[in-house]
Image (cartoon, rainbow, N blue to C red; front, side):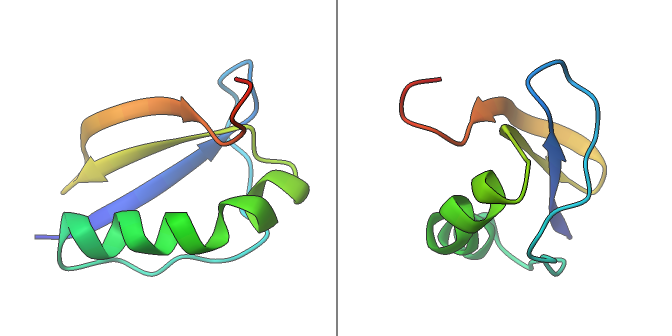
Length: 68
């Protein structure tokens, strides 16, 4: 299984992340990574993130800022 993040602007258009994530082997690892880097991603132009497992959306998009 591979867990991956997709990063988007608030309009849903995909953006390249300012911090490049890896493919994660567990959902917890993917979520921990996002918890560590969300500010950098937000500062780099991403407004929201979607988590996928093997290409299937698990949840999201969710805002990267607390006010979203």
